[in-house]
Amino acid sequence: MIQSIDMKSISLIVLFLVSNSVFSQVQFKLELTAPVFENDSILLAPPPTTKNIISLYDLQLNSGKNVKSIGNSKGALLKIQSQNTINGTVPCPLPVMIMGPKEDRKGFNQSKLFFIENDLKIHVIDKELNFTRSPDSRVNNDYKKLKEYLQKADEKLKPFEKNNPADIENKDKLLKAYIRKNPGSFPAFWEIIDNFSKYGFHKGYLGDLPLFSKKVKASSCFKDFERILSLENSTNAGGNFPEIDFGTDGKITRSGFEGYKITLIDYWSTSCKPCIQELPELVKLYEKYKDRGVNFISVADDRTQQRIDLANKIFKGNNVSWKSYFDLNKEFTKKLNAGGYPLFIIVDRDGKILSKELGGQETLESTLEQYLK
Image 1: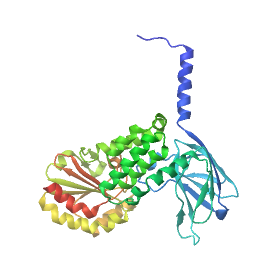
Image 2: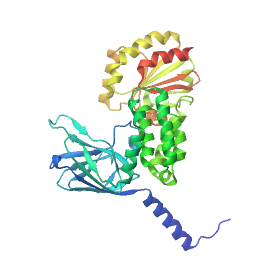
Image 3: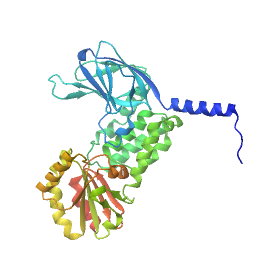
């Protein structure tokens, strides 16, 4: 039965939707002084991260003569004056850093992280980008407290390298304890994102998210990361490898795994130096295992003709004879949440994912041996 809705109810619904939309954005004003860079340009940028995480950064600026948005609203180019005010919105308090040219103009220095929030004052002290900030900055004070609490755990971990699982587990336990005491902590939320980006997926992260407050959960940052984590979980060890359509290149289907004991899928790019440097060792591995029921497949994250030609040249120069594809439609990236390379995925004959590792070629042979047994 259809019930009538009066104008008062409609007004309340509209008010709720508008309020919810406004609530999901954080207005900020950043007052920046950097006399050592006056009349020079510096960058306000997200920290180094994998490409599937960069989508969470959304810095909507009120652009002006000296403030320009860059990287599809992922950062800002600032031409420094004696006083600099940057206004805009973010979906939640965002971690950023400052990047400025070195004294010799060869490369950039980068600052430590700080969070964009409401009213914030930053004073850059020197060319190395040491800075002071507002002492009453609530989110940044929370971040300082969190990093001091996690310092010993952080010291045992190396970003974008293979780490001891026990060290990752230990940090996650500490983080859980912090979130339980501080459920409204956006720095703790971003710490999970940073861990996921630097050290890879850990099932413990799935148990961290429910511990946060309603305010954190209401942000689009939280909802978007929750989707990324859910996809990663479904396509990690124990999940099923999805069908990937590469257009004219062909497809990877479940039936394609049936003729082999295991299949090793190598996701790489011509922009990835380690991928190219380690390719000769991958070829040796293929020669050793191809007669033992191991299939190799490469998927390149290259789409321009120039890059495709370069990839083919690299493969030809290294005598690569296994099947290779180009992810022209970004299907591999989307369906497998592939955020970096080299990414190695091992799949059994039924299409079940046995292992998914970012980097870690040094342990690839022992992993293959483990699953061949």
